[in-house]
Image (cartoon, rainbow, N blue to C red):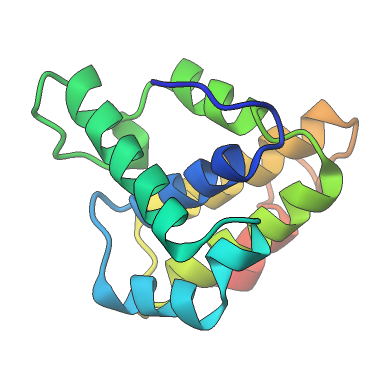
Length: 148
């Protein structure tokens, strides 16, 4: 996987791309939701630049899996997931990305296991990095609860 500077618009957009592909594919409804939310602009990118990040992420997935990417968030190596999430450390940017991710995965009216795991992992990872905790190990973080 290519790397982006910490807290760059591209790093934030790639986390959003990871949510978009968390169920193994992206739908037109999810892409339309990103447009309605002005996701690219909110992250500091043009729509074309966001598309480039999404395309690059898809290419990186294919390269990492020898051209055989047919999976979802669960198939992505946990070390890679943590590296990608680790490129966004600013709490305000994390909050913005989390909101965009949550709205994106809800857009098609279906929450897959991969999408729920993505949101849960993302909120848990970012909370741990800054000493924040959610309600406990047996409950889902507030963002995941709001998705159901």
